[in-house]
Image 1 (cartoon, one colour):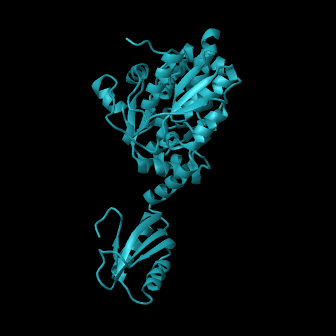
Image 2 (cartoon, rainbow, N blue to C red):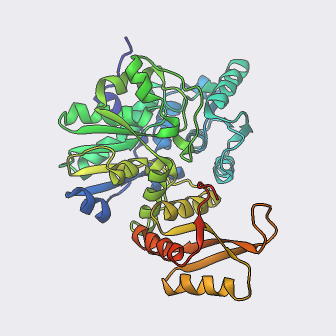
Image 3 (cartoon, rainbow, N blue to C red):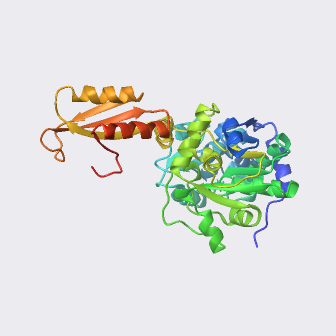
Length: 407
């Protein structure tokens, strides 16, 4: 049987990272507090050094290497946050670091990892493929492999997040956090169940990369045949052996959220919380907003990271607005006669829709002679307003379709 990390391991880890990592703030979240009917707090690891909680576990793991091991250098694999945590920790501890990242890793995360002094190799399309390459590098060169989640030192380091939560919010009854490989939720559960057994620990995965639910049903780690999500930081195809043992014994539940749920959460955090958070860092908030899991308040949701690619942020904001009914993309088919486009735009304006862009098409084989197709992007004030606008256009005789509907 796998030996679990203990509370004392986490306390020792806290001594190691003292003065190195930040004690990140806990901020109240009014929208979630209103939605859940009780206090909800956000543990802001997006404000941690290197932009995520990962530096905690990485520093503990590298600090515990002996001088000979550290002299051989370290190697890691990551989509970005573990990469930056290892690069920063290795630099602080005087060890050379090589990091393998998927080819599609966000450019800001690649640049930041290099900026902390690590050598970066882009390999494969997933973290799992990068892990294989990193392990091979370790075997060939003697560098010490720093696993992103499946090591007792890493779990102990991540567990320091929970020590801070229990001190900052001693009345907490539920802790919700994102789950990829399981290092963070394992460390949090170790502390919570040792100091406050009544506290529920809930893990959240993106539905498109949820390896823990089938693994828990099977009683052992199960590899997903394929996976994908905008939450690249938790896109892991198989739980670790050590983390699986912790989650199976200590974590109360693991739930999933959709891409739309994640987009809505990111938008709310940006608009209402003034928080820049990456998709993986927002899945806990997404679960609370979507009502995926019933929680007892006071609750704390961990914002595990803030390293988001600005280009992805633009797409996610648009997606979140669409999911909230505040951004419409649709096509109107109408007769091709002078003044028809102006009439259409005037009707949208009369219903207080804000037209963002327009594409006017006459040369389309789907169109009948004398027809024109107008593709529009329109800002609205919410789902109810969107429904009223579309109903009004159809009542005026326009044929309105959406991308997922046949013409």
